[in-house]
Length: 260
Image (tube, rainbow, N blue to C red; front, side, top):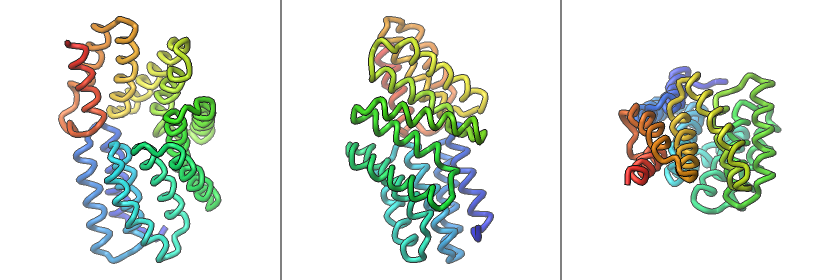
């Protein structure tokens, strides 16, 4: 791809470390990737590193930080005619906008960016785009459309054996089902449990935390507060860093609520 291998390895390490539950180390590796790329004065390597750091900020639910990387990414991509990276940036910007409350605008950008990226023949990030689409649809009440996106994501995972965000796909499916109708609680619970099972097999602690927080909140709403607190305290207690991230803050807040 014409990209420095050191930049590639550091960028992949950043995503992997976040999945494994090391959010702070992930940021450190992403910053190292950018520093290396910039030292080489290689626009392709710089863009590659910026794509990964922007996605990492989205994974950490830091929409404004992601947009900072995306502005730079768009400028370089346009300057050097990097259509695939520009398309990816468009989709990521859509998700950042969704996180900041711009649901419908964000959905349009995710759709445009994902379509443009697929037109280039690059499909490796398609599951992320489908999950982003589902989450965006959930926030604006387009539940059927969101569930359809997740069905496509799960089919893609089976067809391509591309399972890096399969746990999150099931978690989002559970969330959408609950938002759609309270009577879906049983199916939603099974989705959360499936997400936890997958995350544990992958040692993906960050995804396990998200899924456990979701199912603990469901259990609490059903009156099973002790069970909810026990399961959430167990996974929360595993973490040694990243306590300033939104996911761990949400888990901590729920633990405090359940303790009170």
